[in-house]
Image (cartoon, rainbow over all chains, first blue to last red; front, side, top):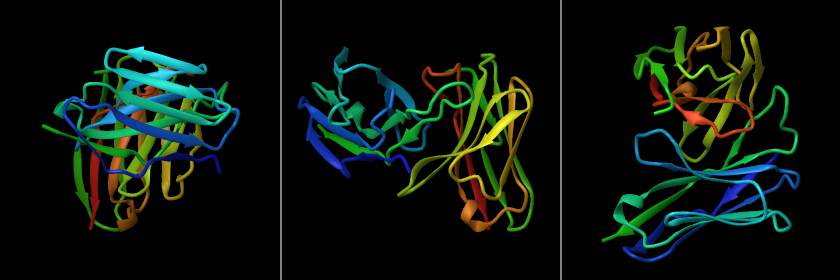
Length: 115
Length: 111
């Protein structure tokens, strides 16, 4: 069973701080990694995707991938109350291709940004 | 909005009745997925489709069937609903290895 684990949370940070969300995965050959944000009562929406080791920045968001450690993280700089949501880590497994592009999701981390 | 709609958005039904949920896309994406989301379990894949009439099981497929007779529509059927199938159901689409985009969800309550 390929697993994706996220820090359990909930995570609470003050406005303006850096929020750090972490995710580990068990399938060493995983190829693609995604972070989704889900507001309460809404559907998941893509925040970041990352495919190679290192950092990828998009505005206030930075995704970090370390395949050797099987670890992916999401940093949110200058956190805002509007960032308060559940963040889902998703991993595309090593056997993807052809008919199979399934994602395995972590259970999510609830982030609260306090004004 | 990735051009995905789900219907109905809310449904209350009784144990033992059949239920069909519909996912409709306007993006002509090849791949479509059905997930359920429950507290403490996260998003779990029920079934997926990689083309018209091409479907396969996900990790929690027992009690569910699917059909895809047209590119734009992917139907999820609960043949005989049980209380354990009370959940929020999300449809997602993708071109393949690219990002999956989610529909607005259907809240199903089985009494």
